[in-house]
Image (tube, rainbow, N blue to C red; front, side, top):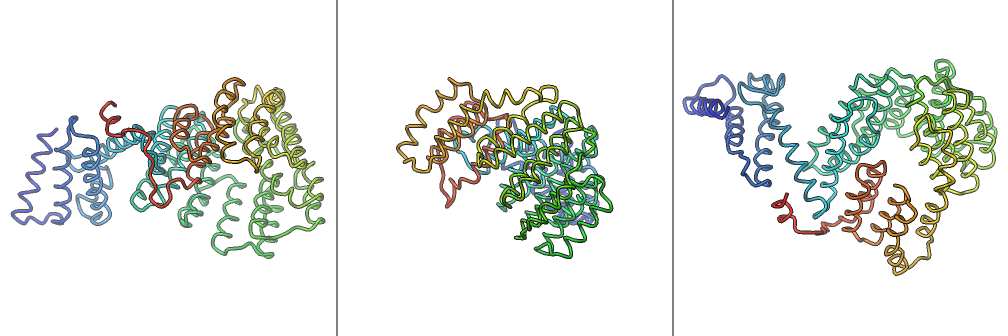
Length: 482
């Protein structure tokens, strides 16, 4: 293979010397640069130098296809990722493997937002490659959104936004083993991210590809607000009419419409709230494994939002559990019971219990949902106690340090789950014990449902603003040992 590449490089060099013009000279120079870099690669090359060498190859490739895509070499690369014996796509795959391996090694020692983004992308890719079916955990998607958020905020890493989005598409949207409802659910999530990132055209393309009416409607509402900045009375009425005329299952579209109206600063009168009651009639849910969970999350989230509308919302909330009670057998009944408990907790201003109910039921499988209430009751006291200790606003920094010293033992003693570990992690970030937080993140939390939540907490903490860096070990030594 190296002999073939050497011959190709010599041909290109001679072509440059003698002025052949079968393709652009600049294009040939770029290809020759990539070939020379490829020949320099070896297993013995230091990892940082190897990454720089791969980046030379990738940069040459990107420049050719963007600047010289209509030439012979450009067309060959666009169609197959190869030119003669030189495989750019293989080099890209090898580069990403080396890159994620590098960041995975150094992340616990020299933590940074970019480091966490690469590890999140790597974990999502590994999960998707391992499962590749309906069993793919949604936390893989959350990992990719965390990665895209970081990459999109830094021009140096912006190219990896497309890499992460490509993994997301392959894992969730182009996955033929997923139902059309599941695919459109993930199209919707990616479209929302693109809208927040200012990529309206990309979001519009995803929405137009949807087949599920509720997600298509949701996308239309989001695009309207993104392009016009508001949702006026006329637009609200038109969308309301569309729901009544075109969508037999009205609960979720109305949730999207009302939530969007609230987001734009609108208010609802008592009469308007009460008039929404008939909207929440029982739904026919076909996918009891996935769709039921999504509907439950939507209904619970809506309940949390409209409680602010006052006592007039209580009657409306009482009708919401009926949406899913009569479908999916025991699972539907269990979810309806969860919503009743959740909504009751909201009206008692008990956010801890409401969140614990959501966390508990979403960890259960359909065959075990009927038992979820005992799970909540068994775990509520310890996790709630832990959170209450942390949420007391008068706690001094010294008090928090004292809590930190005994917290890990407390969690182990009471066998608390991921949510408790997340609270411990938040406290470590609050105290700016960054290395302890990173150790916990990569130890007890990585690979769990709370890992992407914890990464998001890290991104929100702004611990690395203003060029601040943290060292948790000897990076060079660790690279040598690993």
